[in-house]
Image 1 (cartoon, helix red, strand yellow):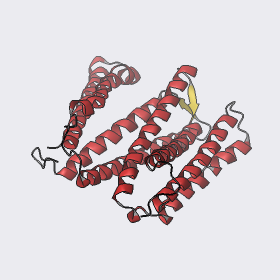
Image 2: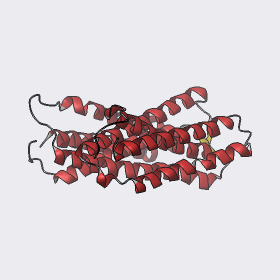
Image 3: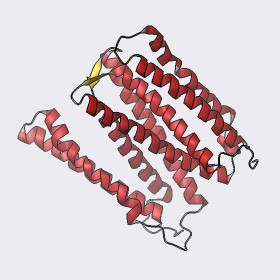
Image 4: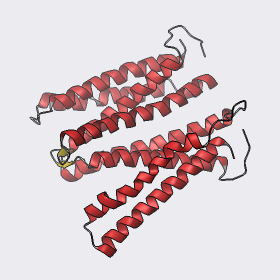
Length: 140
Length: 148
């Protein structure tokens, strides 16, 4: 497994954790009862986000070879497709549930967090599929 | 001009046409006809942005030629740079669009659900627009370039 693959696996795990935390925070306050435990959960989402930033510092992209770069490029593009599919789905769902309704602004912030984790997750899965999910691969 | 440039040029033209038509419709309906701004925006202005959907056909219009190498390392580098710039600007604007109402209305403030589709649609336009501009900029805006 090369550095790029290790980074992708780590990114996958962190984004899954972030997505689970975000979904819990979103669903926990679904009845608008503003329970503080779930609000703290929302704030805790910054931990996986900071971890992603640290990850990109610790394992920089410049050590990659051409193949890794190509894979990363395709994964990035697929990641943004994932984000738009996720956000589009949420929009359709909201328009069906409450077409003339209102949404709390803090939920929009939470959605941005979730969208970021969907991006990391889709990119990681797309990259790992291109690497064939192998644990033992070429070393770069 | 190679395939990537042609697609970028097509996308840029379509986005600009849809934005210009949309803004013209909003201005005419609001200032000349006297419709309320919300109706001018939602009813007609946004309608013209539907033309933006034509960008989905750009890969079909400019198909890959079989038996030819249509993408080299330079193209990959340009595409990567264009994607990264587009995504950076998209995320910046997307986060800003979420933070601004939070600070204006407060944490318990509410906003119409129509705001979310506008954010997403605006994001898509931003990504495609920046990607097209950066791609054409990197190739030098020339109509006659290297054929890869």
